[in-house]
Image (cartoon, rainbow, N blue to C red; front, top):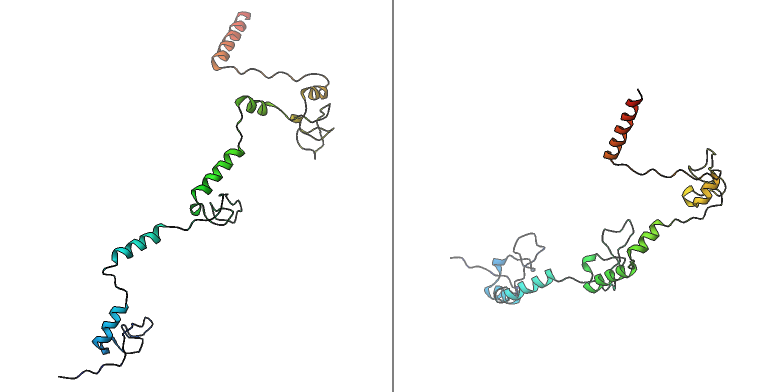
Amino acid sequence: MTHRTFCACPIYTMDLQAADFGACTCGEARDRHTAAALAKAVRTTPTKGGDKAQEEEDLRERMTSRELADCPRFEVDMDPLAPFGQCRCGRPKAQHTVAALSGAAKAGLAAAKKRDDGEVRAAMAARDVRGCDQYVLDMRPAAQFGHCANCGLAKAEHTDRAVAAGAGGVPAPPARARQTSKELREKMENMSGESSEHI
């Protein structure tokens, strides 16, 4: 039977940078350490036996919790180089608090004031007429299509009176009413019946 010689290292500590697996920071292999040195290493190394539930809880907490931004209101950064959905503060939308997100929603609702249907229709039907008193079509090749030679504005920006004055006082013909297919067929049948009577 051979007698083994052990190294003088009091505590076995694994060297993670060592070339040989399991070598101690002192440079010797694990099996060259005494039982007392190995026992001290076991006691100083954190064990997972009794604290496993606590470690799992800590890990779950770290994975599920997230650090939220201290931004008071989420505003989308419209810079084309910014990542999609990023706030002006530089953090993504997911990292904002519920209060910051609801503040952004409230601000958006306040910006869009409520108007009744009559106001909306009136605004859509109203034309901004700021043209001159007489619309004259600009016939120069460099002129924009449909613009006035007197003021340079489009025909749509003139009043009906200015357009009529530009046409020599003759108002534009009224727009024809749209006919249904049935009405058009009846009209054509009446016309063909009248023409066959003349023959």
